[in-house]
Length: 186
Image (cartoon, rainbow, N blue to C red; front, side, top):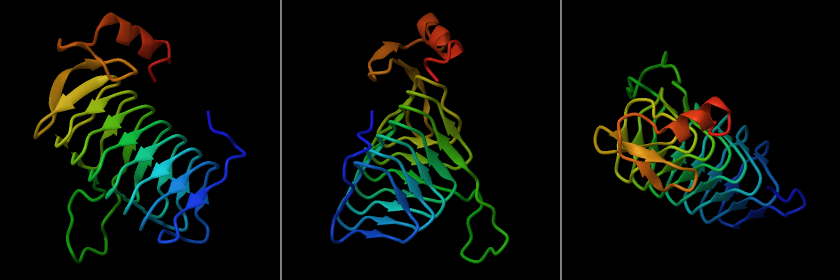
């Protein structure tokens, strides 16, 4: 729960542009930059050298560790964890000179965790409470509660809301399927 009366903290070296929406209790640390049309929820932590691009939406209680750039087209729902040096992309065919390029969106659902140095290729959805291991390169959707690792990232099992591995089987355990169907596992 976000304390709606909590003050926003912006470190003196951070740059929060006019028009940026920052929720109560959020902390914006050293050298971070939040663009003017970005929306950052309450109770978030934006670590050193975090960049939040124009029109990015960050939910409540999100923690983004140092040296992460969240580019236009990326949406992070509530309680997402983004480890240090995670890379988000937003262009499937990048070129230095491409005036007709289109932003390809990426959605990270409620409670998902992305380990340090992971790369997420745009156009994917990371399911609620999913866990992406450090150093993974994610090129496909990740199911709710799924654990993925490697390059390219491959399924390695299933995790609960705390991130504990509960199964190494290919199919999700019944408890996960029931939670997702009931809307409790998002």
